[in-house]
Length: 184
Length: 184
Image (spheres, each protein chain N blue to C red):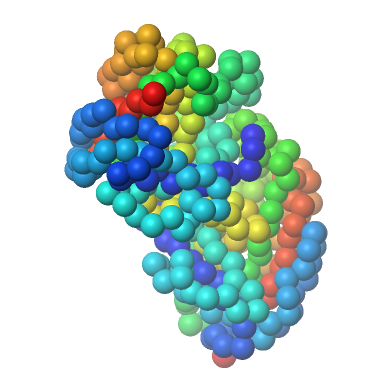
């Protein structure tokens, strides 16, 4: 597990990723924008806002047990593959009812009831991903997940997020935006 | 569980708390300083550094199960009691070996092997405390714990931190400073 990496997702007129569409699944939408760029490392804290700006930080595993950590480590999960010209940024906020749960209760909803880790793993390595935590940074969302995949895996990606949205865990999601992007 | 509260601990010539002594138990020391003040809320992010400045954020429970959350909630834990004129700030950093552990492994070390939650609860309500997370903020320590107690409970507080430092969990601590404070 590398040290926490701070990442800023900056939407505006510039950036390598073209925003193809944004769907608001719950709560407030994000403003329209043309393009997106990712700023990683110390500069993420100071980059000025544009159309919108979301910040997060990679962190240690919060729910995965040893068996799951080892299974995940055995699956290639590589960002910036040349063939992966499609991406999704899915910012999510969870309810205070979620955050009021004890650790064992959140784990039970996330995995024993919802199979969140297992479902995500089924779509690796086609869908690479990186989870960023935002809640403790005072951000409007709790999590920002970034996904990259080749165009031929878009249907699989849609299936994956559809399955996750049907789980008991998603009853605790009160804001969700699905931003789809492409690059040449 | 309230929303995350950002807190800055600012050491310098001013502040209601007088720094009585600082002991470095592991790793690098902190510079000497006379007094300490706490800045809570949005101002914590922008307060300028003085002799030293440490930032953290309260967050959701990371290890406590439902039984423990309920037991903790049943114990009064109130900061700023008039009689609690002694305080301790204990910044801690853990090794990468700790952060590489899976969630179930960290839980097992923290509670089943070390009884961290149970030991802490034995000293409530005499010792009030608040845990702040710092690692995901890019800070030099991973955790800042703030304790307040009356002078007659100082021996009990020393006993508590001594017991915790003897646990398997503390083998993962590679930087620890113990700052003791008082106010009139």
